[in-house]
Amino acid sequence: MRKLVLVILMVGGTIWWITNAFRSGKVQAFLDRQTNPDWVPAAQYYLADWYFLLNDLTQATTGYWRVMERFPTSSFAERAHFSFLDALDQMHISRSYVRQEYEKFLEKYPESAYAKVVRKRLELFW
Image 1 (cartoon, rainbow, N blue to C red):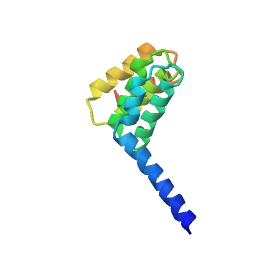
Image 2: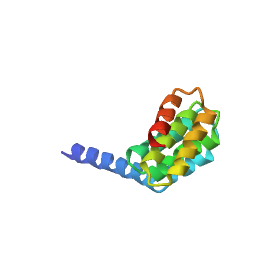
Image 3: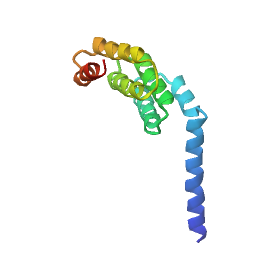
């Protein structure tokens, strides 16, 4: 019984610590200090995806934007830009701004695997 209580306390403490680290911005601050293009773009992208899954679209778009701006040649930049568009679609912001971002995507990645989807969305929504 003591071991079970100890395990429950350890798991609960770990969950609290992780949640606190994300909410306090410590994880983002850590990533902002890093410059290694081998792992930082992936970590930033997946952190943004985590916020997207939690429906924190402001944090998600900010995270995707960081990948696009800080690591534009990363293999995650294109995916981050597309995910950025997905998040923008769900936010209540200017449709003209969203359209401009779609057009920027097509200018930057005209041969992208996502380009067909982006073109289709432009046709449907505008």
